[in-house]
Image (cartoon, rainbow, N blue to C red):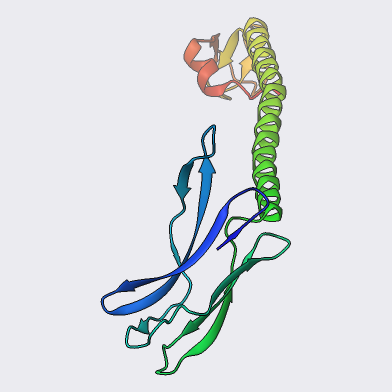
Length: 193
């Protein structure tokens, strides 16, 4: 076992399961006001293969050290290939700070992008809405003015006229003018731009 700068204990050990040994690693945090309460981490298997219990004292050579970054390095004896050998492994006990920073940057970038797109969309919609309303209002006013100006309709030319005469000013037809109806305006009134 070894203790790190924060007071956390790192331990390595063999566990016998089904007649075989397997090396494990875990940490112990001491909490509470007197640091007398223990919190064990989940155990992590160090090796992917078991050692037969036929070997005496397989954990006789078992060592753990932490490097400057708090990463555990483990050396142990293992009889997995029918002979006792020394093995080595190292790993991380927690996510390194640099990974946390990168993850935080990615999350901030995603949130910022979504926020900017939303703000742009809302502002763009606000700009378009008044213009659309203004155009609709202008078109209504022009249609209203057109109806007040062109009160007559020619049955022959299917066009409107502003004066009632004996002959249509558009086609020259005689007695083809009459008072324009709502249906005439809906069907034949030109699009006003």
